[in-house]
Image (cartoon, rainbow, N blue to C red; front, side, top):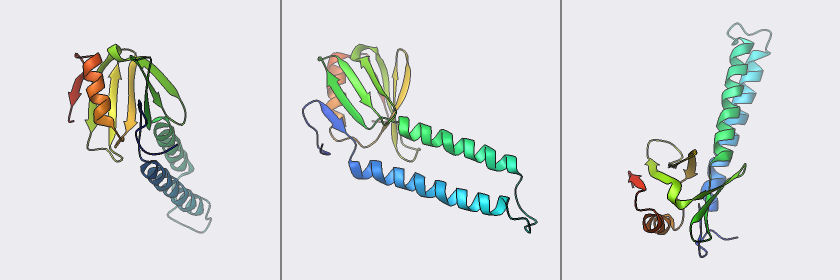
Length: 149
């Protein structure tokens, strides 16, 4: 598997995917070391309540779930079915059900939100060949809107 566009497969560069995963892992480990060392230090006067550590752990779990559910690959199947692949799931939708493609420039990592008839999904950006995919989408679904692209 390469980072380049292969026919009807468009992928985020592997280096981008690994970079954000490593950054998230580093931040998680750093927080866990800091939180547990201060929460369980019996001599410390400024330790946070244990429920605060629990809330932040839940937030970290949600961030990991969001990141692992973010699609990093687009595949076009049967000339009208689009598959979005992530670590946790694979979503197949007909191209005519895509309503909007929006670049979220104020998020880090930059993401693309794809709104379709049944919901929405996040896509890691940049994707090699993404504008080819967008051109194909506009051919097969002229009513699909694009924002910030």
